[in-house]
Length: 373
Image 1 (cartoon, rainbow, N blue to C red):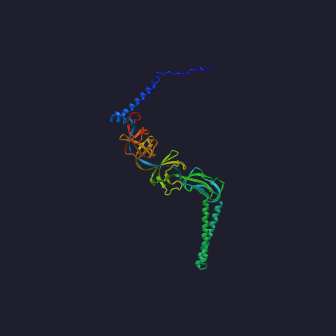
Image 2: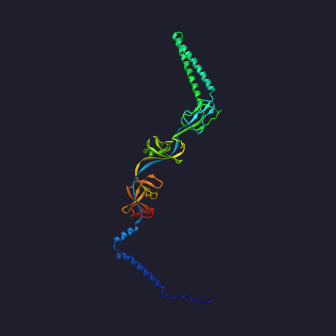
């Protein structure tokens, strides 16, 4: 089989080398342009540099703030407690003859709440009185005989001892008869009365509970760092969970901290003449502790520096200045802070975009109508 294949032959394209010359030309032009800066350096134009700095400065809104004298308060949570509260107990055993009070009624000290049957007690008293009368006669006779020289001194001493025992027995019988009356120990409200006619009670049994909440005592725990600002007789504003408000006074500040919490017990006495504020409810206490000069700022302008310190940003000589502050008092719509000069330009808009020491272009903060102040 004959080999009739023919070898391929290529002819040169006259334009095939054109792209190589174009690329070389572009590269040469770029090198000349980059080197021109060394051959012909640009003039130092201070006006242009100043314009660049002005362009880089961030625009912020500011407001002039001046310090004011404010009252500092200690705020705490407490609980209203009655001035006095006690369980009422039967002093003797017996059957309940009648109940003279009802649960929830106001009673005065000495009011009879219930009576026990007194038949046995009255009999014991009559017997004790008879024994006392007999002992008294025997003593008188012994002294008379001693005076005549008939009786001995020992007989008189024995008669005197018998008379003393009879007197003590009569006194005990009288007290037992009085104990058959269950009485209110002090003025207050009868919260419980757990006896009914015909019921038998034993001595020492709890039959009721009486509460005196006129006045109220509001107790709270004070942190150790706030203890120095409290003292006896300070005025305090107390707001109860019911919405009622009263002005009271500090009646007690503890001198020993609780081991578990390191807090001190304090008590506020609050008038409650009508008794309309119940005991046991929660209360918020506010006690003035002194004066301080502070600025009022919105919470939104308070920020942290890189060290994590709380503060606000101001403008001085066209630059941002970060001031560390402390919150002296919190209100519903803002904070009173200390640590600032008496008068400062607070950054109120744009503070999140600038840092301490950066140049800024301050402009007055717009008022409520949208007009710059």
